[in-house]
Structure formats: C-alpha cells, structure tokens
Amino acid sequence: MLSAEEIERYDRQIMIQEIGKGGQIRLKRSKVFVAGAGGLGSPVSMYLAAAGIGSLRIVDHDRVELSNLNRQILHWDQDIQKRKVDSALEKLRKLNASVSIEVIEKSITEENVLNLVADCDGIVDAMDNLPTRYILNKAALDKNIPFFHGAVRGFEGRAMTVVPGESACLRCLYRGPVPPEKFPVIGVTPAVVGCIQATEVIKWVVGIGELLTNRLLVYDGLNMRFTEFKVNRNPECEHCGQEARKG
Image (cartoon, rainbow, N blue to C red; front, side):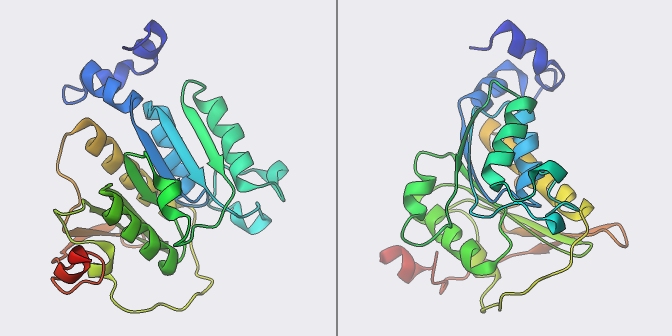
C-alpha cells in the first residue's frame, strides 16, 4: 500500500491514467540494477528514485575525478576522489529517503554478474565499454531479466530495450569487437539517453506503453533529430540464438 506521504509525493504521476495508484505500487515493489554511477547512471538512478522505484542496486568500481563532472551529475566538486558509489548513495538518499539504495564497489565480471543482478526486476546498462555490456546482456538473458541499453558519444546517444526470449539482444546489434577508447561526450547527451532508459524501466515495471524492443533509437543532439532503426533478431547470435539457448 502507499502511505499518505507517498500519495502526496507521487500525486502528479498517479494522476496519469496509465499509472494510477496500482502502477505506483508496482514501482514501489520493484528492484532495479544500475550498472554504473557515471554519466548515464546519474540521470537513470536519480529519475528512478524520484519516480518511487522501491529499491536500486548500483554497482561501480571507480572514484570521482574532476573530468567526470561535466556529465556525471550525481558527483560534485567536494566528491573528487570519493568512491562513486558512496557519492551516489549520499545524493540519492537526500533525493528520496523512502527508496532503498544498495551500492556495491566492484567491477562487473563474468564470474560475479549473476550474483550481482540476482533478484532484480530490470538491468540498466549505464556502462562505457562494450565488453561489460556484453556480460550484462548475457546475464540478462540467462536470468530472464529485461535489459535497458544506453550509450553515448559526443552529441549522439543510443537506446534499446531487450526482453529475453521476445526481442533482439545487444549481441544481435553489435557483432564485432570494439577496442577501448577515451571518447568525447557533452553532459546533456547522457542526460537525454539516461532519461529515455529510465522511462523504459518505468513503462516495463508498470506494464504500459510500447518499449524499444527490436528498435534502436538514435539521438542526434547536434541536429536535434531522433532516428529509429529496426533491429532483427539474429538466429545465429551467440547470446540469444538457437544454439545459445540450447546451451
């Protein structure tokens, strides 16, 4: 049930017919895994906490650096050299004390990922490298948990939602290796893409709207255009293809 304080806090979104009190209760009962507390993880976790997601589990192994501050809005000048998870925990508790925030300082690996995402209702990809995204994608498929992908570079961003067994997965989209690199980004890009990811999570939890399944949404901030591409499921995909599913 919702308390009187929660009904007041979420009044404007409860007014949305598709959400209502029932949808707000579903948000309260949900637990979401956020991989990363940086550029994408900041707006994702902030807007999910503001919306009343019951529990957030945030995993990041980095410390705050000055060069993070143009885009990672959970972290401020006084947080430099702090663990990102500690900085995130402090801000999110101040934003909405009724949300349970669990933070874990670890690198996500093939060995620990299944334990990290266990008992979560959704996995948000807020990473900055493709190898870890692949690990999360495979874990989402193995655990039958929806996976909310986001990526940014410069003024461009991308978002796609993966529903295991129903849609194309991240490995269907990106099929080749990508070398690690330091890439450019302006802070408003992860803000836009992170909000799209958070919107997808809210829709999934409540059970409303049309998700970005089998669709890649590309945001071009420089020319202010959104373009959508169809993503076909690859029957030979090493993560979700027929042979992978047999294994």
